[in-house]
Length: 252
Image (tube, rainbow, N blue to C red; front, side, top):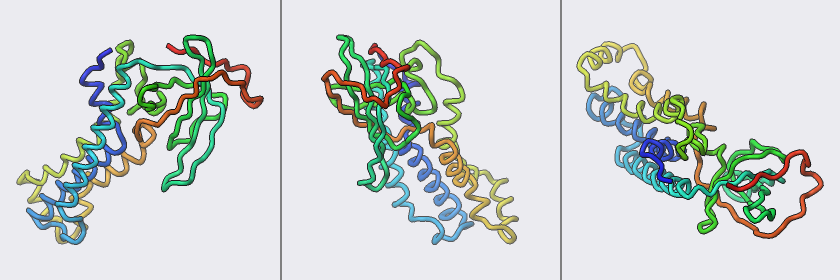
């Protein structure tokens, strides 16, 4: 299966690091126009342009690379229905990760386990979810972690992507271009009149403020990264704590 260009952009732009890259890009553009060109904002209030540009390029590049890796995995269509057995917190790094063990049944009828590391703890033992994984690379992700609230069916071509998905993902990139309004003469004249009586950072930087608010308000819809998945290909005995009413799903 070959996913469409629109679907690829949804994945690439929907990464957390990509959204952060657009946020930094908007801040860099804000500095170019309102600090360096019009001097409405003191230089000390915004980081140097070279630093902002470098961070933006780094974040956007990393987001594109990780999004492309997820897209390649999606094209392989290795999707199974997994049932969560247990959740363990891992606090050894800077950010807490949750080690989630899933059980699924392969095409041969044997039960197997998947270990998934995620940043979100939004599942409880007994929950069933669709999981995409690549046995060769050991990378994959849950359907819950697809960007913008998309589903595997959206990338398989069996279900169109909901327009609200694009709204969630494209707001931050569009707002990154908002500082370009500072090139419109009428806008500049208005800002000059406000300069004496208003906090110019808030007036000129409203788009950056909205970007930050939007990112945090919709953070559950953005993909952190392709999660690392390890597969143990042996029959397993189900723990007594697992709910028997939820049988393991079959692989596709």
